[in-house]
Length: 475
Ligand code: GBH
Image 1 (cartoon, rainbow, N blue to C red):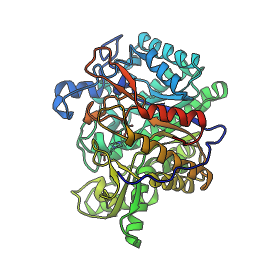
Image 2 (image 1 turned 180 degrees about the horizontal axis):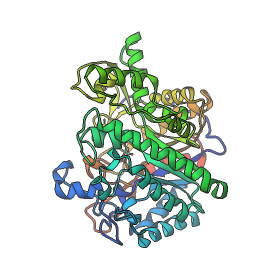
Image 3 (image 1 turned 90 degrees about the vertical axis):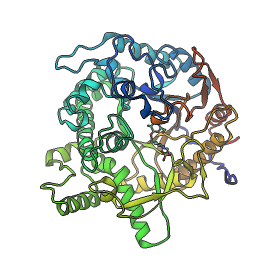
């Protein structure tokens, strides 16, 4: 790993909040309990366990469905101000037929969990969808079918009614790019549809409309009484020009527009970035499609989407170098964007995820880019974290957290970015999707061989705890 950089001496602003993040399928287990329906991960991994690196799945995971009180104690002891977790849609609406009944046991589970957090002074931040779609909805086309917009709205309305008196921070979706481009264009995420060049755009279009309509529904029906906030969590790397040339700078800007911009441009400004519309329209025509592969929003939809956020969620992990490339099969997102990412051998690399590199200054540049693009919106960093193998002396993670938080302090104090909170991903080692349990992002180690899933805080847990209490990056 590279030599350590100087840590920042700034303090976090008075109202800045610290948290940790997680998601339901990655930690809960209890797949068949209390009336939960099957999700797209259950369905696929039970049939084809070889999809996952080590053949594992989320059937038990951290067993957080049962061990939630212990999780809350760990979060409390850390001194965290908020906990970002997700609700499993198939626990609330296990069958997807029109007129499906609400599963009371599912509602009760999150009810006691939310009360448990509040009783310890921890603010809940709820993600409504972190990738565990009910399988019955996938069988109707999932995110490819426009009717899912209404299905999501029905689900969201149930959550606002059940929990909105206590939950004031909502995130509709976690990482639409990963849901749609990996799940519908590609095969890196469930439902593994492999509809390259088409699936990702259709899925994203419906997901954006579901986000916008949910925001407007809350604004009209719940916000005046509940007074909460609704945001959207989008992942983006930082993309640095590989060489200092005009062409590489244009590539880097284009891939930012095709990743973070794909989602945030509609939500902040009403429509897809113009570079995306122009390129996908032109390339589709060249490929002899009768209409563009990128769907169009109507005038009403644009007005509905514009400004449909109270805060932006930024999930950021890593930086890549970029260069123009047309070396992609067609049709594809890759060709449409026309940029190839490169890792840099001089940057520290995670031993468990080869694309994950430690580039703290990339984080600062990303925050500044978002500030400049969207007129300095309120931002939460909704995920940021580093992967290691097993072990409690996680010095790499300590270095990642201290250096990334140092750069965040510079973004706040020197660049004037309106960042109001930060959540580390994640509190517990958990089911890391196709990497199974071998890739560990936790501040707390979990023994997945032990039937009680023993939790042991790592060195990074103590370091983050000190940062939270001192409000400075001191180690
Ligand atoms: C997030 O995905 C998810 O929200 C979360 O569920 C997940 O556990 C977390 O990140 C960690 O992966 O070697 O090139 O693949 C963000 C997408 C994909 C970002 C994997 C980090 C590692 C670099 N993540 N990526 S690479």
